[in-house]
Length: 270
Ligand code: URA
Image (cartoon, rainbow, N blue to C red):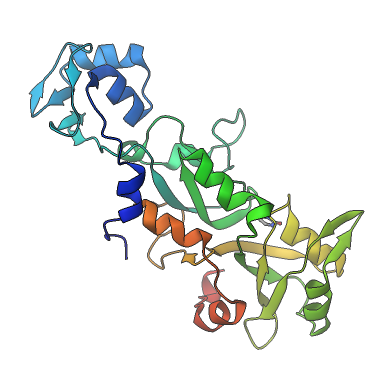
């Protein structure tokens, strides 16, 4: 699924990266500061076509040569789209003085300037998270105006009630805050696990919606954004670099029923 060449990506990258300074290119692609890059150049860790380059001001045309940083070839594309299976215990922020951030889990070879998580999952929530340096795209995914569906699996303290379907569908008000219509269905016989679809993404939204019906979320995982779902083999903490075209699946709609009938949940792992 992750290896289709994206026409859109090419269109977006259509403006060729003409000649630019080597240090600026490396800085852009890695997020490493210009000062640090000077030291890396000195120690021969930046190569152009396999040869160490010490002059950061050298003009290069990245489409015509291969630039590597610490032995890893740097990608040409301007925008990067990373999906992460966010684990519990880390925060969705670029910096935090107390907790570990999702950015600290991004592998070095995927780091580049201006990467940031698109929206927030709570510290104790797991699952699908987009990390990108394409601010415009991130805005489309998280803006309530876009109405992008987000699907969550939740484990509840008390069993699911059939009445929840209508209550969620009509929209919920909790302590003066209004949440728009949402879909809900139980996933197991006992109604301990549910699938929820929301299209807003307000702070603690799923948890608050269950508090409104006097229940409590004990575990929460985001499974899918639009049509893009968490790959089964992407373990918590792991990341995957995807193409723009694949990221665009997040902007597409999928019916709640289609997601519910396809979803596989390993209940014993929750
Ligand atoms: N709703 C929540 O309550 N928490 C999340 O992390 C995401 C949605």
